[in-house]
Image 1 (cartoon, one colour):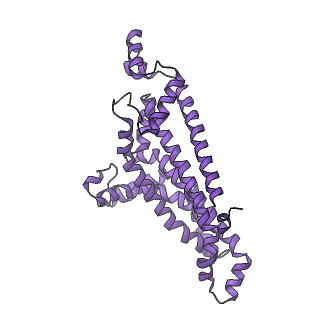
Image 2 (tube, one colour):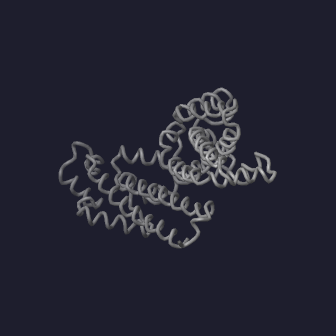
Image 3 (tube, helix red, strand yellow):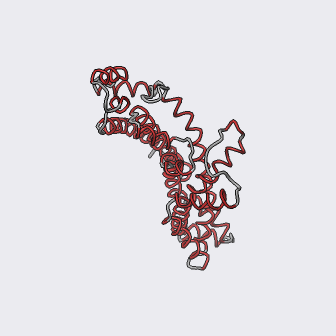
Length: 315
């Protein structure tokens, strides 16, 4: 088990190091100079040069990269070119919207997908299975922003149960915050639940043909109890993998949903920073998202130790 964890941890460190280099190089070679963008096309060359020196853009790229990485290791993400505010504080303010939204959507997706996938697997080839597979195929095909617009039309405009957009802040109360995130979370969760339900069904179907499942039935367990007590745990490895990928997607890929519902999250922050050529914000947010993706995958690997006892040995 220790060897398994150490290998995964070393892979995490290597992936973070490579990702930081790639992110820095890709963003640095993108066309457009932040100083020229901020001062406009009529700015004098000496004024642009002075602003570049003030922002530290005149330093060698290697020195800027090292300073950026060392700063992040110390919790200092730098100062935004546009807002002249600490990037770390800007990220923290918006993380309190994007992170609860991702967790909310993942919880809804899991609560929907696992029982639905198990239901479909237990009724393979029957009407219930066919209905579930048809619904999940529709969920996979339809983009989440279309679900978002339908939810706004139905529940915000027609029924007026929820607001059409915006976020009041957690200081307005937990209930108000959850209400504001409900429609975006549902719009994000439905396509992901469709994918997860199909994976759950396929994994469980593979398990149902195993000898230990027939033994459990022979000992007198009913089919539903055999599925929940023995089949679910053995079918969870591919499901855990998809859950890890889905959380990363929900945190990093909710830009369109945040635009639809006008949520002040990380997605909108990245979008605004790209349009304003605020490189330090883009680099820091993207690196944070990459770190989250890699860390979630590392935690999923550790969860394999709980699901699969064979990985706990040092052999």
